[in-house]
Amino acid sequence: MATKSSHAHSTSRTGSKGKSKIHKVMKEHKQGTLKSGSGKKVKRRKQAVAIALSEARKSGAKVPRKKKS
Image: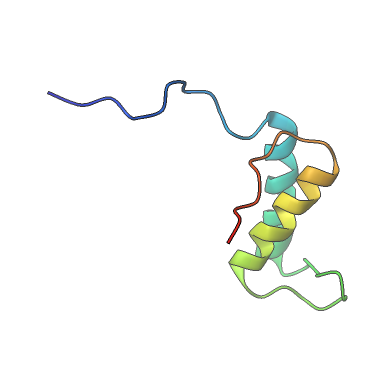
C-alpha cells in the first residue's frame, strides 16, 4: 500500500507570478546573458536560482522563505 506524503496540502509553494519570473531568469542563465549585481556573467546554476528567487521576492511574488543556516 502506498503511503501519503507528510504534507497536508498539495498547493504550489511558488505562485504563478514567481514561477514566470524564475522561468525568465533561468532562461537568461541558459542563454548566457544573466549577470550578477556586480555585472559579471553568472556561470553557476545555484547562483542563477538564488538570483531568480531574489528577483521574484522583490516583485512581491509568493516564494518560499530563505533557508537559515
